[in-house]
Length: 314
Image (cartoon, rainbow, N blue to C red; front, side, top):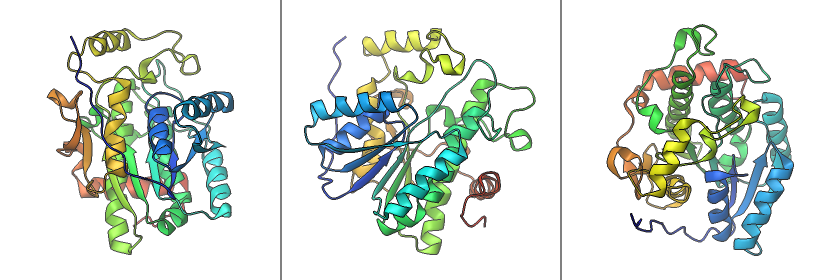
């Protein structure tokens, strides 16, 4: 089935400094490439330096003269997050765009971060929460827009407040949903607090729909030696243009949320097709688990406590 080309226009970003997590492959690589092609200086924090260098070479082939900087970052280590934050703050250059994009999904067995948190909660949420906290002075200086990636999975599920680290009755998918709900609650609370305290930051959310990204692909470091049956089905449907998106279209909601002058603070952007699984990006109805202001405030306080981030807990 022929697929209609879907794209958006990214405005001129000359003079803007952007930070994109997870920029070494998949959606993150595509997002970084589009920002660089639009003239932004793009910081690519990566865990694997060799993979990051290959990604930067790929971007430069499509955008000669791209202004790219690789930095080391392991979101599963708060020490690594703090080190990157300290380096960038010391350099002192304002940040205008922060796209909290990186993530892990459904390791076959429960794993933990360097700090002992359940891997998905610790990486997808706490790592990005701490990174944003460390970069707050630069984000304020740049009157930045912060876009955080949630998921179609965050449209259902709950926060497991009594066992955030899933030490009892581990369920990989429920833990993944929780991690993305936490990301969404954080992004919305960041907008509320910026408004209340005059930080000058705007914060919104995006989700990529469903596409054959690397999230469910073979990841030996996660204990997944081969692609899951689920990712094989996703590839089959995506290749035939049935309901789902592609890696190319999956990056567009985040790009819209982060760069479109009309994108709203505190809003959610995702694909506009059936079930928000694929299609052109557009503003979406906020996911129900993200609607509770009390939950967002609670998630903020808990995240401050767990990460020891230099952010007000209340």
